[in-house]
View 1 (cartoon, rainbow, N blue to C red):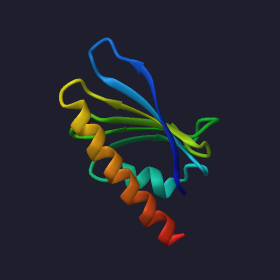
View 2: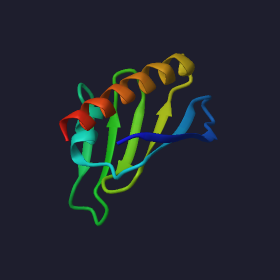
View 3: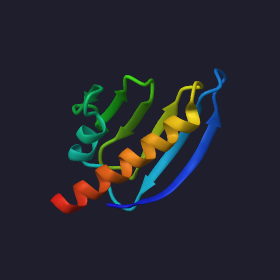
View 4: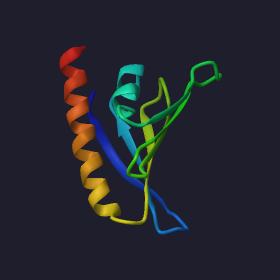
Length: 102
């Protein structure tokens, strides 16, 4: 799976940044679990649309629905540019690993 678009969704009142990441395929459980490694995962597989929310120690929050092609990422105000760079690098590494595995 490849990342095809990143777009700014909105400015947050607290100064954070909200971004939408769009992929060329559907988000599956292995990608969700990879994104959640070392973080808190709230996963609701029994919802009509299986929703997940990931809260990382650095304050980054990731929300999405399995089977769709996008996730929403919230970057907190403090060091949001650096957090964005780190998250993007981690995401690309995870996408490469998932492509090689499947």
